[in-house]
Length: 506
Image 1 (tube, rainbow, N blue to C red):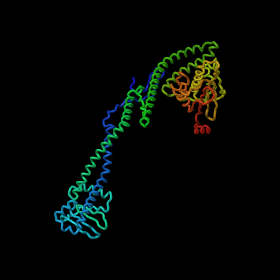
Image 2: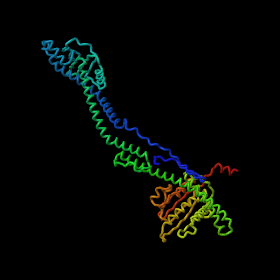
Image 3: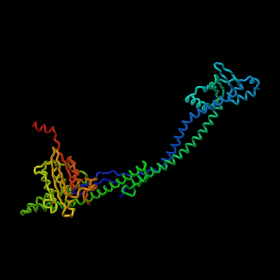
């Protein structure tokens, strides 16, 4: 069932054990609840809000400047009228004309200040008490803004005393009502509000259309691709196809496609491992029974007095014993863990000799085997696990060289070892075709690191796991000579200094 999840495996294998694989929790795909208040609506609302905030920030200095301009205009009108007001003929002007002139200026009274002398040029009534002084000789942004806001918020009429800048030693002062000023400022504010709203809406529309094409649609496509893929990650047809964009979204599409492809391959491999684990558990159950029966027969054969039987029966019994242990080891590898090494001092030459005997290298018709290990060379390792490592490496070399049909090709397999302090280095080399570049990429990985066509790579994976359990390393040696050389390093067990000191004292 392709449900988009990989579950843990625990397959019974009768008396042969179980194959276990680390459980992976099932993941139920989560479907989005629709777009709702999605990116598009959020984008257009935020654009309008931010544009309006910027307009409000610009409104305060604008309305402050408008107030100053209004008052300066009134002073300019009063200055033009002061020419007539200061003449001797002004006293002959009828009262109605004087009131009309003051009304055109918008002032209740006009005062001309010369130094410390103040002269009332005109007034249509007794000036009321002044509520605020607007001194245009000294203006600052904060003071003008505060005065403008106070005028807009003043619901009751107020009287302003407007003091103009000094020109030629003289300055004009006006006493006016703030109602005309407030009405003009409200009209200006309303006009600014309408213009700001129009600008905000147009800006939001332009930004929305642009970002919709550049960001929202590609992001929505990415989200839909991820949701679609999560429903069945083993279906390669659901992997996103990059659009070819060169920006960050294009890079995200390429990386997402690569990640989905890698995940699909990993899931396929895990499913393959699960199927393989089930098959191995079935084969192991029957194979162990067959090997146990064969071991009973070999015990009976060993009792025969024939010299040839007495010579080969122990080797047969040992081979069957190893085969039975390998069945259990296969299950151990299925659990992705080898047993802890039971380390002893092992004669490496004997281990190499046994591996060569099992592979038939002592009398192989085509491959010449050379053991360059000294007879007294010792390794601190688990004897059975070290045998498996040497056997797997030698078997790979033999299979690689047996695949060549040309009789003129030199086929040689050799093993050598050396000790440097507390570290032992073992090299297994051959004159075969070597390891391809593709195989090097996944060397020592099960089902990926096979060094020959059709190989599974299990031998190298098991060898690497055993060597790592001994605290050592295994790797392919780079060399210009033909063939392949694998090097194993196994350190001796560390000595507990306190125990050694006690042993010396005792």
